[in-house]
Image (cartoon, rainbow, N blue to C red; front, side, top):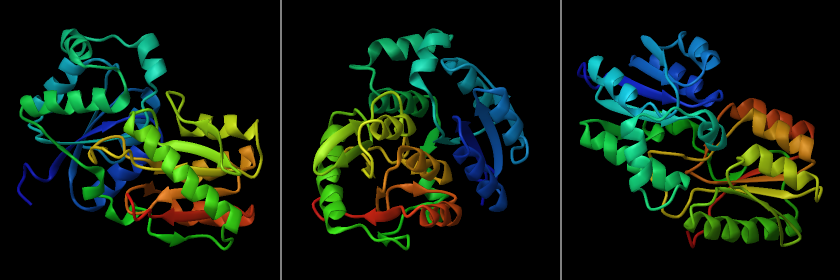
Length: 274
């Protein structure tokens, strides 16, 4: 690899997934300049990054300045950013305010696409996390000992269509269904909160997580892991259906072992229509 190609700028949201990406990039001999939004994430990223910077959400000018000063050209985005929290405490700079004002709506994909366009204009290239984490994409098929029942397969097919319809509106990536009834849909609160809310309404439900139909594969890809299974257990859900080849399934071995312990079925599902 050329020196510029071996240097990656990681824009890290919260959670374990950016840490897993940083660890894997380091194993592949990349040098990583990380920008994150919390002290806790900063401490974790120090183990794998050449340099780590903490900024406030909304400091777009500062983010651009850091990567330009470090001569970073290629960027990767991964991790959870709580938009509701960002709206409460964010300290946007002039560039971020200008971007916010020019977008047609404030949904996730719209904002992230506008951000990528802005970064492209500044000379950066935003890479898809899947370029570096192919081995973590969900394979097709049943991944656990327990198979979905006939009724659960029907719910998977039904919920998949609902999730894709919602995705077209850029609302969310996750729905929870039971007996072909929609129990909960994901919005700003995120997947975990959606599953827990569904658990207060119906037990033994089916959780579906998909890529939005017009998803830019460089941003906001659906990600699950061991923590997702822990949430399923709390909600007393019985099936997790992930869109095959397009959903990241991290900590897979531990997550499947935990799912098997509690009789939860996990499947990589591919709808031939999508």
